[in-house]
Image 1 (cartoon, rainbow, N blue to C red):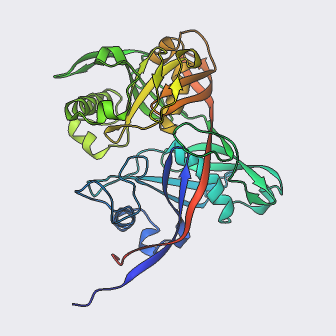
Image 2 (tube, rainbow, N blue to C red):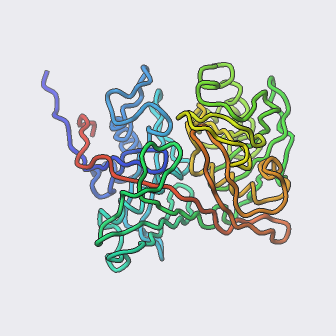
Image 3 (cartoon, one colour):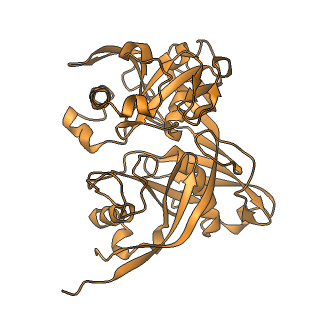
Amino acid sequence: MKHKPQIKIPATYMRGGTSKGVFFNLTDLPAEAQVPGEARDNMLLRVIGSPDPYGKQTDGMGGATSSTSKTVILSKSTQPDHDVDYLFGQVAIDRPFVDWSGNCGNLTAAVGSFAISNGLVDASRIPENGIAVVRIWQANIKKTIIAHVPITDGQVQETGDFELDGVTFPAAEVKVEFVDPVGDAAMFPTGNLVDDLEVPGVGTFKATMIAAGIPTIFLNAEDIGFKGTELQGDINSNPETLAMFETIRAHGAIKMGLIKDVEEAKGRQHTPKVAFVAPPADYTSSSGKAILASDIDLNVRALSMGLLHHAMMGTAAVAIATASAIPGTLVNLTAGGGERNQVRFGHPSGTLKVGAEVSEIAGEWKAQKVGMSRSARVLMEGTVRIPDIF
């Protein structure tokens, strides 16, 4: 039986923050995949190597973790005063599913670089030397993000001495600003800074449920039997613990108005996130680095796609920054309470400093901007090959 040959699709494999994924220019995709739908999803699944019952994504570009099973489609922006439209697809590892419900904050750091290098940003906006300000329209959540990309001799500067915990090697610093990350929506969907979240069969917990960056459910580590200094192996090796977190996530999603019943949570793995917070404490990071309680304001651990994240999702960092700046949330109280515009937290790979500008207007909290520093670089560019599925 004769089979059709593989097809080639121009692509770039990039690291952004503590994640990596396959980046595409929309116009380079096969015609069938240039529009949302089954053809596009099937293409991305095949590129990444999903669904894989072995959980390895050996026959694709994915790295078999939530941080490395990611895809990005970019195009010249259709929005006024923006340079590039950024669409993110989180590819499930063991199921034929691409989640389009949220953003990837880490890969955002690579969007500006790709956009500049691939002609999606007007040349007049790129200095010969200095910082290019790239205005990104995040199409999944319909928000503006600003990336400050270093430029040397007219080209994106990728090398540098900026170190990011969770990334082995230094690179050039890319400052990222999430502008008005909540918009007109309610920052606290339940109307409360802290709720009693009842989870049948598990318990009732104090929870801060916030929709900033990405919908996130914050819990006190102590309330669920943890210290807040856990690493991946402490949690990901325990199926019962993971099932508990997924049950909490599902019932939190209902209370936040994201889904109507727990069954819907299975089709919305990317959002919301679940995180737990604890006061500062000494611990040793996954790389063996000693993290001192005196160097951080609090510890935070977060789960992504059903597993404890190896560092911290960029979008969850936006939620952490925002919640820390609002007196009375669990994040703020754990960090010491009171007013603050920045916080440094510990995560499994080390520490991260984030800042937020917030204000209370007519009894409603608003976030004007959240900022953090990441880094990004191209790992490989050329074409990715997949069987002709069209």
